[in-house]
Amino acid sequence: MRVFLIIAVLILVAMSGAALVPLAEPIRLYQLEATLALAVLVLILVVLQPPQKAPLPGPVAKAASPLPARPDAGGADAKIVHFLAMLQDKGRLIDFLMDDINPYNDAQVGAAARVVHTGCKAVLEEHFGISPVRTEPEGSTVQVPIDYSADEYRLVGRITGSAPFSGVLVHRGWKTDMVKLPQSLLDAPDRLPAIAPAEVEVK
Image 1 (cartoon, helix red, strand yellow):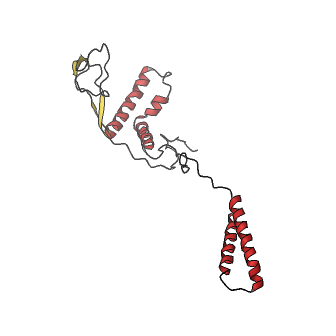
Image 2 (image 1 turned 90 degrees about the vertical axis):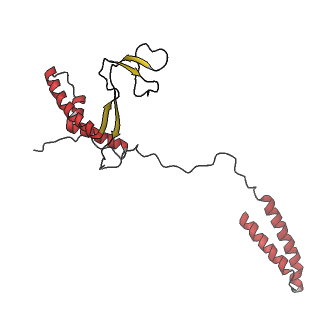
Image 3 (image 1 turned 45 degrees about the vertical axis):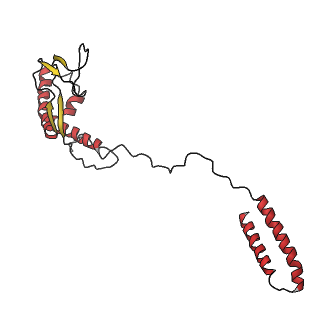
C-alpha cells in the first residue's frame, strides 16, 4: 500500500509540474482531469492505509543471553579437585574414607590411619599456613575477648550476658593465614579432572 501511495504522489507532482509547461491543446484538456483523478486516488490511499501502531509501553526486550556454562570447571572447582588428588596421592585419603573399614581389625585401621595422617599432613603444610586459634592447652581456663570473631569461637554451655566470657578451652581451633591451591591443567574444559585415575595392569 505504501508503494502505491508513493508512486501516486510522484505522478501527481509530475502532472502538476507539467501544468507549467505549455502543451498542445488536446493534451491540456485531459491534464486537469488526470491530475484530479490522481489527487482523488492519493486521498483514497491515505484514508485506506492502516494506522501505525505505537509500541506498547513495557520492559525493553533483552537480547537472548547464552546458556550458562558449566560452573567454573576450569577455575576454583578444578583447584579443589586437584587438591583432593594430592591428598589421595600422598595420603590415600579418598581410599581410606570411601572404603568400608568394618571388615578390618583395629590394628589394620590404625596402620592405615598412620599412612593417611603422614601423607595428608605434608600436603596441608605445603598448601596452607595452619595455626591454632588459641595456643593454651585444652582444658585450661581462657578469656573470650569482647571483640571476638564469631568464626573463630563457638561458645557452648550456659551463655548469659555479653563478652568477655570466661570458660574452659575444649578445643583450641584452627585458622590459616595462607592458601596456595595448586594450578590444574585440564584435558577437557567442560569437565572436572579425575581425583585419581583407574590403574589397569595390561596383560
